[in-house]
Image (cartoon, rainbow, N blue to C red; front, side):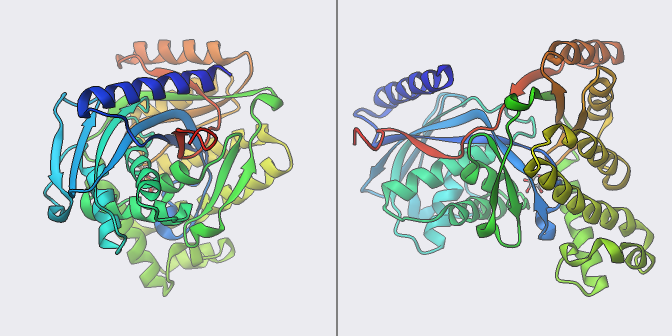
Length: 397
Ligand code: GLA
């Protein structure tokens, strides 16, 4: 009830600010969430599997179509200025900063041949930025779902996610996979999304009843982002693609776990840990899904912790702060913990029994203080809904 009320009042506020900025009412207010990934990291660009869930934190977008081909963008988290662009002049490289994500979606829709024009857009987000929680995917997906309705496109969720991913790859220049955008568009409340990145259309909702099983999921934002992130992500991706090519496979997803040992013998030493991570991580996703389907969410704990060890030791995308957060969570009695998202900083998730949230949070704060790190931010997350229109609701339209 409270969450619904909060969202309604946020939607009212966003619509009010829109009127003040642009004059007149928006055609609607849409919401798109950030995400955490439960398991299945660095598998999406290997055509593999992952299991993200949407966060309750969302980016709200008040939007109104325009007939003159102009695109105006404003964010409550920006510098106060309205960015104004011509849709016809959008091209990769021309828009920098946060505005590149929404502008990129409009560009990607036009590039794909969809009949889209301009719009007035005002964003207001509660998704933490720089925390590995997909704030950029939330921005993109809010625009994708809003434009879908404003311009009557009738695209399906995975198509909208592909458009958003294209915007991020080609317009913003980030070589990500499709997991974040699929999570933001296609997740449903009280479920995790079993994603097969080779065929996103075949995603499945897996019931994830945390509260009903006496569990809580904590998200610990370590508040560090290491600069090497972008180039390192691209290098890892290239390493995986090289390994698949050497093995004669379309993607690492096509290497069965039973053939792993033999395949590793055929690869150069530097590719061995990458391949081992991807193949074992895909197996962890399958295991997690089967445990959830059997109604045993607590069994995710050791799977998460094993996933972290693989990211730390084989894929090497963890960092001292995320390793510390995982160790502190386990020390305080968490059932399992791991870094989530691309890595090099960002956030850690910890699965805990209800009632232990405080102990884990306190242990985390103490461990970070002892190590001389900034205090982490700990929030509790429950699986939320994917991108959607908030107002006008179908009934009042
Ligand atoms: C980032 C990317 C995703 C995915 C993860 C790692 O979040 O945007 O596509 O590759 O890293 O799992």
